[in-house]
Length: 140
Image (cartoon, rainbow, N blue to C red; front, side, top):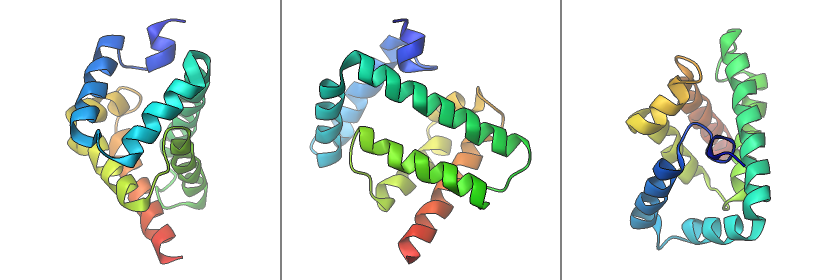
């Protein structure tokens, strides 16, 4: 399998660096431990499948943005719900973590660049959709 298939727009070296950074920041959290265990358990083929599904979902979100859907629209929110649920492949997410991830999409230049390379404005669109999702889920 090519690194591009496994890591998306990131190189293996970048992914190794980000993994180490995540370990430094979140290594003592349950989410980090769950992620390490789940990735180990799914193996290379399982991870490739999850990454392919995530890439396809990102393309669906991009298409919705491109045709002018609002981040708050029912269509986009259904996609974002799948995005949130997709995190379960790695760890059990919560809304606070999801908001933090949303902000990281625009505040961390590496993440922003990854999404902006897919489509201009996608990082901000994702952030807005994810925060709206978290806000509406919290009210339920």
